[in-house]
Length: 255
Image (cartoon, rainbow, N blue to C red; front, side, top):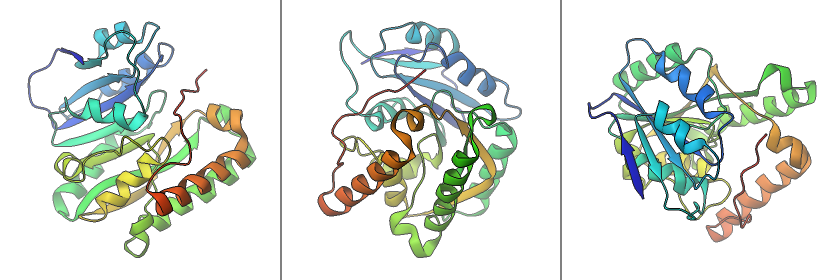
């Protein structure tokens, strides 16, 4: 791996953005992170082997960029996130997928940090998810409502063994992330849920519905809600039965 670094000062929060051919969205994802008030942060972009201008944009905007040798591709998004985490110096790490935005991020971070400080038993946070308003249909809203209720339910102590959290936006203590071994790089699907299930062996995870992570519905548009639901069920069952994913290959789906 080739590593570009700009910032040496130890930050409070390390933002880690995994990317693969995200030249259209990367700048829009990074710029709000530069406008945070009263919080020291570093921005790390972990490239999965992009063939467009993603790396050049990352070098101009991020503090650190993990660049792969020519022709090398990441085997999973979990592996890509882990590579970014290896460069992180922050006490807390925030994994943020490209083209995902939390409008009131400053308030979100400050509330999470206060809870982290006040409650040592809390290891990570997950957030409510929605599609961008101009892309979300009433049926999307209905389905996402079910998903968000499931996040609320499974991030409670009674159901923590099956904790769920989408990889769009995940905020964790860095030391806890290391303690559980980070993301399972062999999981092509469900690595985000698996991380939170592992964290719950040592700490608690919390769902904060008052903060919304907005993302694109492009994957759901390609596969449809029915197929996405079936994939989730199959991958969940495969993991509990065989400790691996039903899905065999990770692919980027973008617009």
